[in-house]
Amino acid sequence: MASKNPRSGSDAVASAESSAGGIRETAKTVVYAVLFAVVVRTFLFEPFNIPSGSMIPTLLVGDYLFVSKYSYGYSKHSLPFSPPIFKGRLFGSQPERGDVAVFKLPLDNKTDYIKRIIGLPGDRIQVIAGVLHINGDPVKRRRIGDFTGDRPGARAAVQYLETLPGGRVHKLIETQGDFGQLDNTPIYTVPKDHFFAMGDNRDSSLDSRVQDRVGFVPAENLVGRAEFLFFSTNGAARIWEVWKWPISIRYRRLFNGIE
Image 1: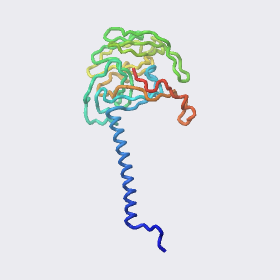
Image 2 (image 1 turned 90 degrees about the vertical axis):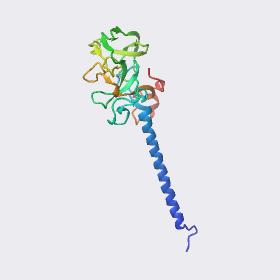
Image 3 (image 1 turned 45 degrees about the horizontal axis):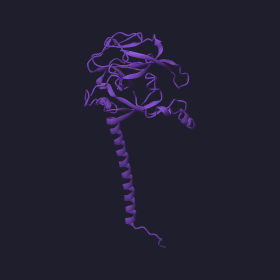
Image 4 (image 1 turned 180 degrees about the horizontal axis):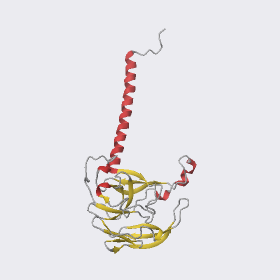
């Protein structure tokens, strides 16, 4: 007995072609989305998160931020996995003193570090009794209220406003007063095409003051300038503790620019 809704061979072929076409369109959409994400990440903005406290109080553990890749031009480190396809920088421009920048650690050329650019090529940098000196002149700092973090066990730290040459103002903390291991240093003369970077948490930052671990930052190693926060969590909620998420988000930090 014949079916009430017979399907011809041409109908079956059309259905198969339609399914194949749908798969192709989905695949093309996925490929385009991936390519778009790669282009944005390589040439425009790349997200980073803060796993350590070396930039407190400017950046806190649990902050998520965007870095502009175009700010200093492009090097091999602008690309995923830093392929050695060219040297130097394309469309390069020099960071300004006071910029918060992401760079590849010179020791291995692959670990991402984020610090503040303090010294430019030719500068003489020294810390004396906790006070930063640039080219022989002490940098002005003003004591303000202590910094108290929002993570469990955090202790109050002495906090200052520091005004760099050129007028950039930022906060810093001294967890050991002016008697930390890095509060008295020799004079560092920044080489050509290099920069001197320091953390705002001056007693708890592995930075250019430690020459055998970080040292001067080559211009080629710069990845980009930190621009703004897009998310921040104080760590009070684990990934599976959904009910705690609302109280773990630092709402006041969301979409703040980075000074």
